[in-house]
Length: 309
Image (tube, rainbow, N blue to C red; front, side):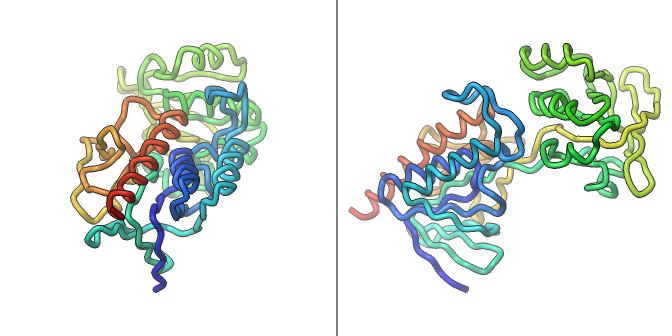
């Protein structure tokens, strides 16, 4: 096991983590960001972004690349590894990884985001990667000229459904309510898209197929009736579970598992901060994460100054 020493350790490489890393490195404190996959987090899987100030329209991967390169120009180090645990050792904050490395720092900033919620229905796990997907930009191309279904009613579900119309002969959005939760401007675009169809008041009871998905069994929540829907794929966008369980010490969370912070983005464990989608807040947008990351890095820098006297 190798032990590495830094001032600020950022866990997770989404927009919040990259911004925290940028501000930490820019303040000339030793800063490392540990990310399991490619930097960018959820935005790396988003086809188009039109609500980030300064860009009328930019692809998610392009924005992720720009953020990463910007942070690296200020000296941010990026480590590719999976964090397994965060804990305290006196004034130091420790980060253990799957590779066996141990990082020691004065502050840790959690930018761990979340994992997609599952439907937890028969066939979901069995057909994962064979017609069941949680990422349109990753897998949409595999289902050209097929009927594609999307489950969900929020911004992500509707935006990803519209993206999938580039590939599918038809995209059917299935929602358990009788109206969408997505922003009105996004809804309007979806309703105008000739390749979009909607099934209301319905949930997926099972995902069916042989060696790949070929149909869904749906249940109308108002009538109780079940029906079959022939599809080549189902993309699931029903929210996500925050990745907030890597801190050894007791840390305050809300009823859904999101980490509670103060105005400095500090958690109930001193020296551990949280930013972005893992933090309890009203909305979860790129702009929120960037602001959170800025605040967390500045607060972490002040903690380091205090500890150094």
